[in-house]
Image (cartoon, rainbow, N blue to C red):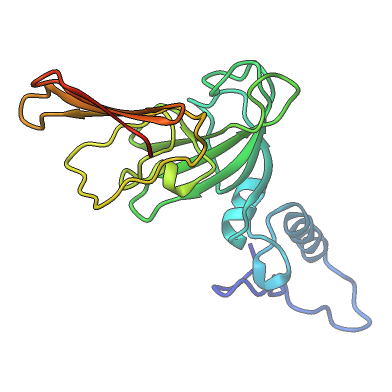
Amino acid sequence: MPRDGSGNYTLPYPAVVDGTTIESAVHNGTMSDIALQLNGPVPIIAGGTGANNAAGARANMGAEVSAQQVTNYDSHVFEVGSFWSAPGATAAPEAVQYYSGVVHWLNSGGIIIEATAYSAAAGTGKKYRREKFGTWSAWVEQSNSVADLDARYVNLTGDTMTGALTTTSVNVSSDASAVQQFSFYDTGTGASRGSWGRAQALEVLTCSVCGRRGLAYP
């Protein structure tokens, strides 16, 4: 192609002398060159993308793909950008859902995809995350709270705290009709060492070692 190393176009043939007959070789060569330039990739320096396909153009321009459709989450060749999938997509978090999400590249060569469910089916709004460092990891459902995802925090429900808890006081509901109960365990053996509870307007303290129980008005 008659472009120099910088991508600038150069005339392939010398200019025709005024008043002379144009040789067929010059004419045909010029027309062939024009056809080649018009049908081939135009470099960025000339206002093109330097590619003959959308993926190559995005790569050359540093652009992200928008709304790439995924039909198989295991085999799809992901690009950085956004994606979506319809119900029935292979290896989706849940088969009955539509999903949309984003793709991130990592400096180490890995890839992360984050998908959010959106449809009338149960579970809409759920968020999932999946990573690939050689092989795909399993989908992990994400919570709406950073605290729920951080092992340093204990969730209000359904979570377990390990290790000793030191406190100088415990505040419970002032509602006398509420029922609260705490259990105490031996940190070494795990054996129950007692419990404290409030039932109606009474407080109950039970020792599992001696079996004694005490009642007191709060």
